[in-house]
Image (cartoon, rainbow over the protein chains, first blue to last red):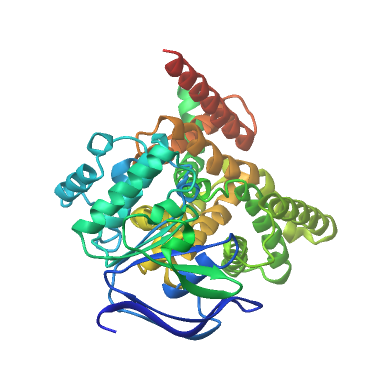
Length: 221
Length: 273
């Protein structure tokens, strides 16, 4: 278990009245790149949430490495918020676990904010409103928020959904660079097979209530 | 002039109550707005009023009555936001809550004894009749609720905006922060209803946040500006009500509405420049 971030045996996921995926036996190593594909409604998000301990398994076992920090980047539409959050406030939320409720992240984490924003090439947007950014910029800020807590794993649930082709390419290029610089397990759910290019992903497909490892060539990559 | 000062002194308790309740409700409105549940704020006072009426049939103890209704409101908010398979659409839920509780309240008031008639003021609001006891009662509930929502705001906002990440960070175990919000918001609404009525209560939840959101440089400043705007509107509305002998609730709503209109025009002018 030391080297693995999560492992499961004979796992079935779903809800009490419906099993979505059964007999899952996988181990995700701490520095692995895992890709997850499957049709809408096939149970990918339910599987992720079960692996992360948010949803109880229908049956079987899940073992998650303890005291790990895990970051989750949702689809862009899920980050839409009515309140006018500044970019700094979005980053500060990523430190919620480290900070006491009444503590402010600034000035203590100012340098960290600056270096992370520089890494995602959005330094000049620090004071901007998150909702006024483009889709690609928003996802880069969400990536910065995910990175700020130095996580052992980052889970991206269709992060490029809704982005135009340039924004998508830029985001995936940035993710690839960061993955080369830092050590963390990466789990990427995507319908866009090109997203899996060049990062040595182990791909799993959810199909007919089962999870099967497939070759990148089967996706035409 | 002296006459005005004397009459304002006579209504001093009302001013204190409106200051405390408006600040606390305006603060609660930010969270309801973020959760896209602002219109639940319209149904909730109505439901709470209905609950208070039912409880009044069984007990004369105000604290027990308020506690029962608080639990009812928290359960409604908790059930409404859970992802159960029987989840109703927002609009349907609000409509059912509003219609059933209003009808129920009117039926009870029509057929019940004199005690429940005291609760009629709950729907209209009886702020001008406030006495020092009302100040203490309002302050005892609203100020702790306001402080809790302010102290924990970053975590509460995160739970609302990024629930999965919050859960992964261990910030929402047993939905603790969600229920903290529900308890504070419900308690503020229930306690404010007697003075501000259902209409005034809803107006303070709605107007400050929608008036100030377009001008805010960040979410944090809303937590200072919304209560401030709520207090200004509450005090002005009450003054208008006393000075021109108008009902207090509608006067306060009128001031809030005018401020919102002015803010909308100002925003347009700024945009055109």
